[in-house]
Amino acid sequence: MGCFTITWRKSTRKDLRKIPPGEVVKIIGAVEDLARNPFPDGHKKLAATQHAYRIRVGNYRVLYEVLGHVLTIDVIKVAHRKDVYR
Image 1 (cartoon, rainbow, N blue to C red):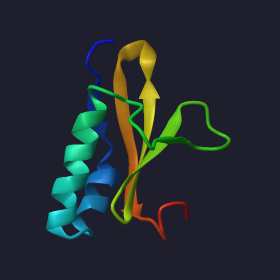
Image 2: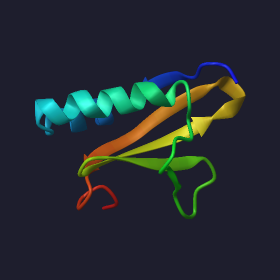
Image 3: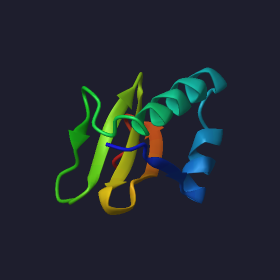
């Protein structure tokens, strides 16, 4: 499997501004790891979606879509676990 390209939505980049800097570093590292392995241990498929998944990074969740036909991972949302699914 080739290396995937990571794309961040504009809204997702705004989400990162609300998160403490130490956590942002961990989140970005976890997302970069998705480029090599889009389905790491602990990933979960989101219900009622075809290509959307989530990973946990501490108390934060990263929601992303895997677009296999173009080898792209689109980061949909990053938020605290209590707010991410709202």
